Image 1 (tube, rainbow, N blue to C red):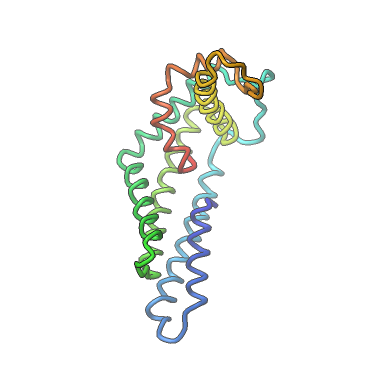
Image 2: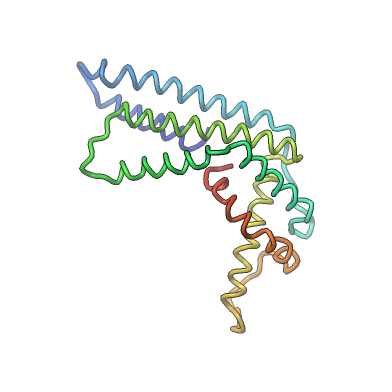
Length: 205
């Protein structure tokens, strides 16, 4: 179950425990309904992950470096996810920022119903993203483990390129390279696209 859905349940349960009396009609009953829906979302999330065709542990290449085929499959999967979520990513970002602003506003009295509605909407958007991810992984022959590893290697290579440029001609005494020059060169032409797709990773996709 994604952490944000776990957070939904925790928040709802904590607030429910603190209520009493007429709060049943104003808070507890709506909270119980939302908690049931959050549980359903968690179950659907688990079922979606089970529908990924490639399963089992992933063993990285012997040299520990991403291959060109893996990079191309990563880019294809990310493009498919973005295409399948036209407008959804923007809604996710906007909703998350709105919720964060509400939490940071100490003078604002957030009601349980409002909090639960926000989390339910966010959870629904994340589920839609997961559906797109599962389709993209299956279409591009990825397991969840291989996809996560390749994604990590791609963004690691971008970071290494920045680190190398920052060092310049200075001796990198404490700097340990984690990807090869070949991988850095392979990833660099796709820098802009990968950075645009980083929002997928931020939402666990």
